[in-house]
Image 1: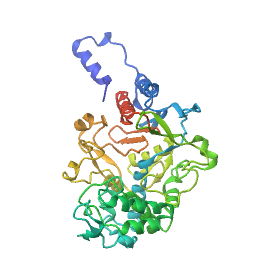
Image 2: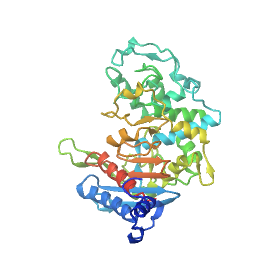
Image 3: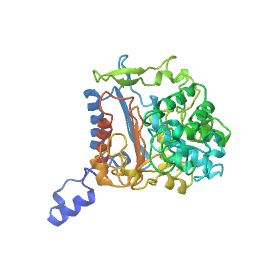
Image 4: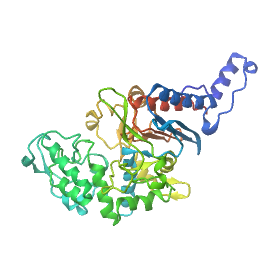
Length: 428
């Protein structure tokens, strides 16, 4: 319990001091086992973040013990137009797409169409017999045959050796940019260009946040015989009534899409990056549906997905995965040596490891000292580049969802405020 003294502890102490009858009765916990005052503090923290200018608007959701305990919609969908933020505002969730794609992959593994140790070349011949650079910065023509090929597990754990322009050094940068230009043509041309390039690292040896989940998106499509959007819709979104989740925003829902902001490097102020309307990047189905970060969603839609993982593969009457698959997904897959590699500019792995598309907390003390703040051991989730964040905490039977569209300040500041006030509000 964080930030609150339990009823049992108070009464026990009072009994010892012989003053039990002089203490006032403690108020009963509110929805989800949170204290009403604690929930007010969560709302106040989010309002303070908006007032401070950390974000234009935010939607937060707290789910615990089988019920939605609180939803906050604070600030604006569009700051200039003063469009209020709403519970059903649609957000670009970026890398929060990855856990969904991980689940889609596990579905196909359970059906026997894929396997964790299966070489991906069975469905992606473009990636067969990869070349490997001795140093990621070496010339592209110096690659030698890789000791082994890429497996499904390598993709799920970002250890495929495939880099992106943002993580690759040397000549690989421009070559990968050229490959990414093929996204406008479609997945087949993109995977062909990626497969023609050498790997930056030997498969399985290093966590390298790259194109692995975009490759998974192509793999899912070929293994299932359906496009990635159609597979996700049929197998995940429809069963869980995730009616506002997809790779684009239909015209009749466009008014609910939040404006996306960027940060001006000179002024450090918010500038518009994408606005709702026919010119929005998300106004039509993409030629390349990105398994790494292409989805839009809402707080309630993502809660349906997170509840399934919290429920070990089941949400309500729908079982999507076995207990074993969810346990595997939420177990650290990185070696101690791999966790020593800095990520995202700091010691990202101090208190957490990485499973299949999600980070997993395993050192509560070190996690609390990190930019991420307090979490129970076993908590899992993965954030998005536009400032979105979520976490499921099995120990507390809780899901936290935080949605913004890139603040003017460090996105971890308001996220941490939400996270910490949420834990302090627990009162049972």
